[in-house]
Image (cartoon, rainbow, N blue to C red):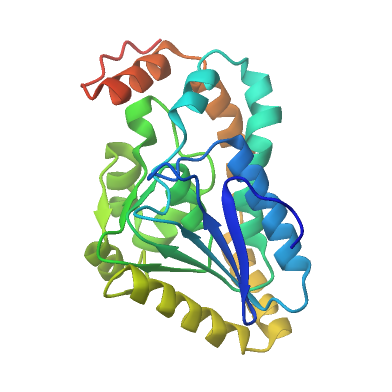
Length: 266
């Protein structure tokens, strides 16, 4: 792994590749460069025959507390087609690589997994959580929509009613509830135990026949995937339009100023 990563730490532990989001800001807020690096890391780990499984995690207190606010402010003044072609190519690119990865993928979630962080975790095969983990699709509070697959995957994981609570109300789901509703596989005792359990699960999956794992995963996706590509295409276009609205600018300002938003539908 010769690439010098700025926003990630990438390691190989035994036969498991670890992609650790590490912005050094306490939140692991994601920007386009972060997602481009995830794409690069996924390509390299997927192509490395010595790597049999991949874990995605975050350094410090949070998996990822969402998109970087400076990046969101830039989006507010960027033309919609530029957003579609330049930005979501890497954001969706990361989600696509995780979802379509032929190798086992595990998300190890400590603290916040919000908006982009939540969507990336959903694209993995399995999710393990620490007691502090919180999933939240709070895009609606910014006047936006989940564009990276969550609207497709969540109803299939937890049912339409709970998915509506998360996507339409922005309701947060803690670790205990996530395990209970099937959003996460298991809860660890703490952050250290989370890393150990994620490594153990990844090694278990790495020990399975890789061709069979890939075939089963592809077959399950085919059984669900009547509209995943349509979901990605439609939602990037719609998100690009929403990012040009006054409601997005107001939603971003309200979140940054910690106040209720005053939305006008424009």
